[in-house]
Amino acid sequence: MAAGEDAAADVVAGRACGSCSLCCILPDIDELEKPANVVCRHCVPGGGCQSYATRPQTCRDFLCLWRTEPLLGAHWDPAVSHMMVYVQGPQTTVLVDPAQPALWQHEPYVGELRRWAVEARRKGGYLIVYVGDDVTVVE
Image (cartoon, rainbow, N blue to C red):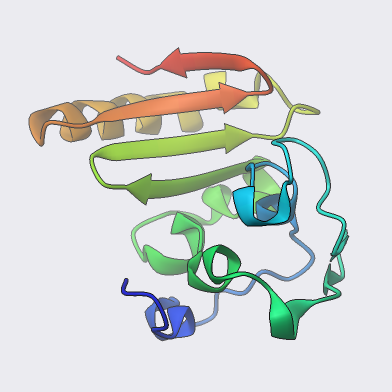
C-alpha cells in the first residue's frame, strides 16, 4: 500500500480490531522509539490509541493479516490466537504474545504456519515467528 492510502479500504467486511491492541504492543515502532513487546505510550490496552489522529505513518498504514485476508479462519483473530500476522515483501511475520508463548506450536496454528511457510518458500520468501527474543524460521 502506498503511503497516504487509506488502509481501511483493504479491511475484510465484519473484521474490526475490537479490544485487540497487539499492534500497539508486539512490534517495535521506530517513529515512536517503542521497543517490541512494550505497550506504546499512546496505547490504552483494549481501548485504542490516545493519539490516533496524529499517529505516525507506520501506524496509519498498518493492518494485520487478520483484518485484510478473508481466507484466515476465525481462530486467527488476534484476540483469539494471541498472535499478530503480517506480510512484508517476501517475509511473513508472526508476532506471538509472550504471555502465550507456545500457542503457535499447537493446532490449528502450527499446521497452517507450516503450509504458509512452504508457500512462502515457493515464492522465494520465508515465514518467521517471534516470541519475545526467540526467533524461529518455520520450515
